[in-house]
Amino acid sequence: MADFTKEVTFKSVQIDALVAIKLATASGKSFPSVATGSLVGMEKNGILEITNSFPFPETAAAANDGQSDSASNLAASAPRAKHNVAYSNEMIKFLREVNVDANNVGWYTSTSMGNFVNLQTIENQYFYQNAPDEKTVALVYDVSRSSEGAMNLRAYRLSPAFMTAYKEGKFTTESLQKSGLRYSDILLELPVTIRNSHLLTSLLHQLPTQAPKEELAFPPNLSALLQDKNTPQPPLYPNYDSLDLSIDPFLEKTCDLLLESIENHHTELNNYQYYQRSLAREQTKITAWQQKRKAENSARSASKQPLLPEDEWQRLFKLPQEPSRLETLLNSRQVEQYSRQVDGFTAGVTSKMFAVKSNLLPGDA
Image (cartoon, rainbow, N blue to C red; front, side, top):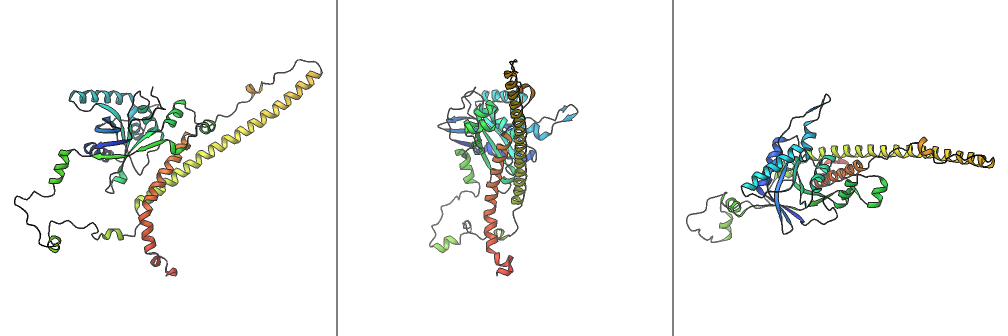
């Protein structure tokens, strides 16, 4: 078993450009379903280098008591499935034969609109981090955010405090108060950088235009340099798309998902409040029974009769079991994730609304 209290030796993640392209391709092909796969690489000088990846084979939903599991649930739980573990070991064996980095350093998954904080993700990462001498991360590729033009790729690990609590399987109010575990302590995000090899970097520099075969003439003045057709446009080149006042559709969808997560959070709170009411009713019954039994024993003691057992209430009454607070923690962490996304989306929209406020509200003009 892994030592959860031991500090991890790496502080950042470095991904080869080939791996990033593979993740984007596999996630785009399987969208809107979840794409999962294994990562291979090595840890070097405090940096976890991910040099290759391969997807898990697709499996059809198997019938179970007349019902079939959804394909999304099967794909989400693929990293810890027994047949996929055997498949990963076989693939790593083949990679080792061709002198490729053959160390399992984690797994990847695709998501949409940042919806990845769930029990499947936690169980998958716990499966990897629970191994001895593990050096693993979970890469989350957001297909929806990446479709805007900027790759959204993040690396996460479970915190040592959450690993200890998850191993014990106790997420009661008392245990959470003792450990001080909060929803913000579930996942630890690591900085991610994408690395290009020197050969690829030189190729990228040669892609736009061919190198001139003759010596270039030095420009006589600044105006001649500005009139050169090969000179790229300045960074502040007019972009009329930024004047569009329509609200970002990703903002609307994220707000809908945020409201849904808040509703799930309130549902969990209502379940816990119902447990508290049930526990209070049972404790009131137990207290009344104990007082009655003490009065009976006092009367029997006065008449020199044998006393009745006072611990019989444990057999007569059954206290309700406290529901696990794990779902509440995960919902809270997902609400925080959506809130960060809304904060990022509203920055540009709010500035536009203030700029045209006089046109939108004629009475304030």
